[in-house]
Amino acid sequence: MRFLSFVAAAIVVCLCADLVLVAASAASTFSTSPSGGRGAVEVLAHAIPRGFSKKFLEADKIWTDYLETQKGFHRKISLGPRNVTQSSLACMFDDGQEAEEIMQIIFWDSYDEWKAIPAAQQAEVEKRFEKAFPFPHQLVSVPNGDGFSILFDSHSD
Image 1: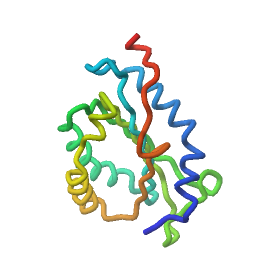
Image 2: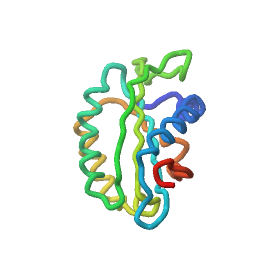
Image 3: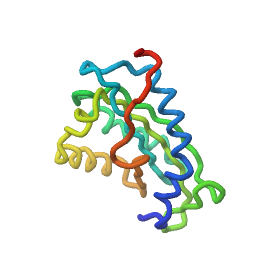
Image 4: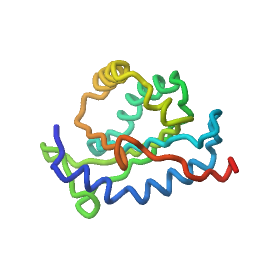
């Protein structure tokens, strides 16, 4: 199912500031990468049907298990659920079902290691995830698919 066209932009506008603070806070436990860089942070917003967070997290273990095998993966944090109401994002799935959000913050040793994951492998993992979670859902990368660079880490200086 598809979201109303403004949902992706609304998620970014409503949540980007909050996510930067959460990512910065979580980054305080992230050490400097072996190459001397401060790493990269991937931030994802998943909109799912309200009440499905437990099923989503169970299915998402497929992604977590895969990521744990990838070079440069450091850690993954899932936050939520946060109800999506008329006052925040004003969105529903096309069938009228209300949504809630699960936010995820994924830490990588480097941007290059994160982006080196082969697209074919990602597609295979996504197929397994879709089979395990056959419900409407929408994924938005915040602020986009390039994530954030860690500019400061209080534990690495």
